Amino acid sequence: MDVETLDGFWQRVAQTRLRADQDLPLETILAGLLGVWSTCVVCNLLWEWTFDLLSRWQHALAEDRGARAQFSQSQRWCNEHAWFLKDLASPRTRSRVHRELFAEAEERIGEMLRADLDPVIREAVPRLQVDLMGSGTCPVCDEQAVVLQVVLAELARGLSSGSLREPFAASGGCCLPHLAALLHALPDSGTARFVLEATAAQLRRLREELETYETEAEHRTRRYGSAADAPARAMVRWVGMRGVVAGENGQGQAALLPAGRGSAAAAGGGDPGAQ
Ligand SMILES: [Zn+2]
Ligand SMILES: [Zn+2]
Picture 1 (spheres, protein in one colour):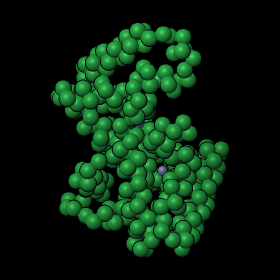
Picture 2 (picture 1 turned 120 degrees about the vertical axis):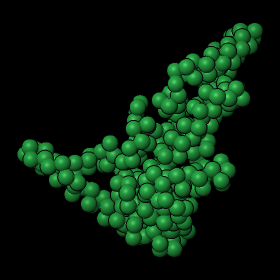
Picture 3 (picture 1 turned 180 degrees about the horizontal axis):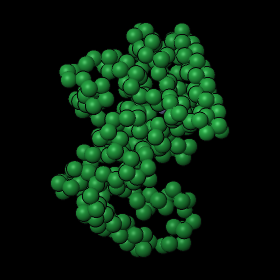
């Protein structure tokens, strides 16, 4: 990930989410995003970034033989990112890249067949996966981990200096997994105290909204006011947006949302994690 690309990413997010028509300082962008997203700003930024990256991948795979060669050698995409790419790339592009990818897999199987299979079948499953798919890691997860550190560092800087404190306190706050990562990134205990106190107040507000939702649902008086999406926001608050937070299997920052959600969210603004 080069810095230029990441700069471009921040400005694109500012254009699409904040309707900014000029370049803004990063702190201003983050303060604005805390105001427009009702769920974890870290999750939402990772989602946006992953959508951008996979959009570039699908374009390169359609147009560029070199990109397809790179793709067929990096077979270890995680399940979530592979399915997200499926939502963005045309069936024709996928057909071509899968044809090339499976040619590589056939070669690996050929190598296995030339060896003694007795020790092979006693290998651990992760080792057999390397035999079949190579030892690479998901390239999207790898880059996403870098972006996560950049986002956390910028958030920590603004919270520590004070410029992001007010927007953070008024926002929906971070999901609990990203709250842990943010605490770890903070430079001083005073900022950590502020973040925890703000989070406790946010959770109290969310519990009240959930109570309103339950009461309205029970009495069939649902008014679809601000509490209407409280259960969805609570879900994000608990575990983070679908697939954005690293799983327990150590597969890294797997992607995104269910099939079809990506293009709609990118085109329509809104808050993909709260749907
Ligand atoms: Zn999050
Ligand atoms: Zn991945």
